[in-house]
Image 1: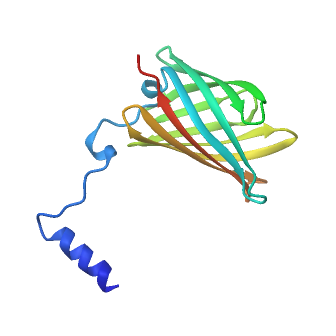
Image 2 (image 1 turned 180 degrees about the horizontal axis):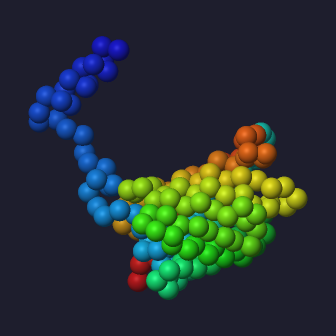
Image 3 (image 1 turned 90 degrees about the horizontal axis):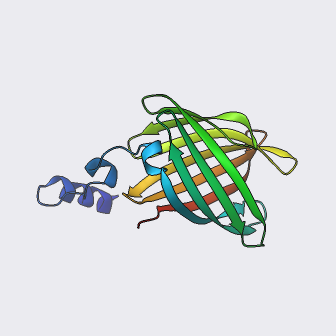
Length: 170
């Protein structure tokens, strides 16, 4: 406790200040701006009950038409399985979107706030309807860190997703 008070005192005593976060120093994270063009994501899904991990790479291509962002995703999993999915995000207002994808059973609610975009949706994965709670955090101009908690029946946590998405530069 004393150490915590000492650190807080030093930080408030002029001269020593915390570095500003990326969110404080740059423009807000805008879904259609970041996801337009070519991106690649690498990461994994972890089953929280068994600890089993499934790595994945996703090639993405986004196109914005002024109202709708179409984001095509090509997945390659570490076990060799491949999948293609396409998100359709419709801008409903400032920082607010809806989203659908082939396997989504409950339309995604998408909200942007500073450098964080949150998605809440349900999808049919195999024979199960699972609920996803994604958080996308922009870490620099070309990188977004995506974490998601995955639930069965809305409250039984079954998995976690951890992906790093990077815009391809030419």
